Length: 408
Image (cartoon, rainbow, N blue to C red):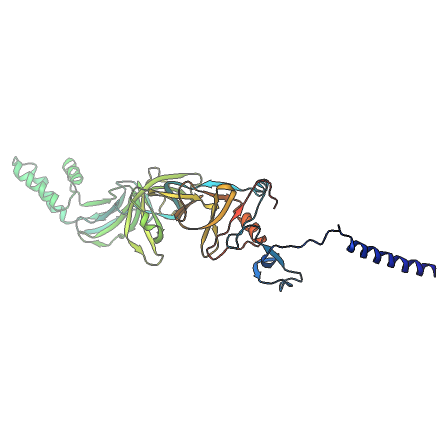
C-alpha cells in the first residue's frame, strides 16, 4: 500500500513540474529548422532524389533532407578539410604540350631476304652422272658442289681446240676458244683443259653464294636441258623481319621508324633496326599493314621462321596536349578528368582523348595547357561526392570545394 501511494505522488509531482516549466516566462522553446530542403534522399542510394519526406523504398529507414547550405541546387558543393586530401592521397598533374612518342608492341616473324637469291640452272644439256649429298635446308658455302653433268657435245669442240694448239695460227686458236665459251663451257674448265691437254666433258654444278639450299631438283641418271633449273639458294647474311601492324595505326607508319626486336630463341638479346619498307597491300584476312625490317645476320644466329616481340616507336611530329593516363575516368560512354581550380575547387570535365603511350594520353579537346587535373585520388573524390548526394547534372559536372577549417 505504501509503495502504491509513493508512485502516485511521484507522478503528480512530475506533471506539476512540467506544467510550471511551460508557464515560466524565461523557458527556451524547441529549436525549429527554418532551412528549406532541396530534396530528400536515401544515404545508401544518394543518386535517387525524392521531393517529399518519408520512408526509403530501398531500405527500411527515413529519407534524409538535403539543404541548400548557401549553394544553389545546380552547383551543390561539399567542404573537405585540407588534411583530408592528404589522407586520400590527392595528387595533381599539369596539362602539358609536347611531341607524342608512342610505342606499339607487336609480334613479328623472320623470313628470308628475297633479294639475296641464286637460281642454279644447267648451262648446257647433258646427263647427270653424280648428285652430291645435299638436301633442301642445308646451309652451304659458296662454291659447294651439287651435281656432275656429262656434256657429250663438248668433246668434239675441245679436241679441235687441242689440235689447233700445235699450229701457229693464233686467230684460229682464239676462235676455237670462243666457240667453247659460247657452248656453255665455264672459263675455269677451259683453262683446266688447256693446262692438262685432256678433254673435260663433265661439268660440276656449284652454288654461286653462301646460304640455305631451298630446292634441289636433280637426280642421278636424269637428262637435263639447257636452262633447266636445278636448285635455288637463299643467302643468310641478311634476313627480313615481317611485322603485322593494325590498320588503325597504319597511317602513322613511316620508313625509318625505330624498331627493337627480341627473339624467343635468343633470350637477353635485343636487335635494333629501322623500318625499311611498308608494303602497299594490306593483309585481307588479318586487316593489317605489312612492315618489313632488314636485319644483319653476320653470325647466322637469326634463323628464318623465328618469332619476335617487336616494339615499334611512333612520333606524332607535332606538339599535342598530354595528361597522365591515370588521371582519366572512363565511364564507358565518355572520358572525364577531375579539373583542379583555384580555391580548392574540383570539377569533373569531359574530354576527348587520342593516342595513348604507356603513361601519357593525348587530349584532343576539353583542356588547355597549364591546367591541373587530379592524377591520383580522383575516384575517391567522386565517391565522396556521391555519398553526400552530390549527383552530377546532365552536363556531367559538379563542384567540390575544400576550405580551411571545414569538416567532412
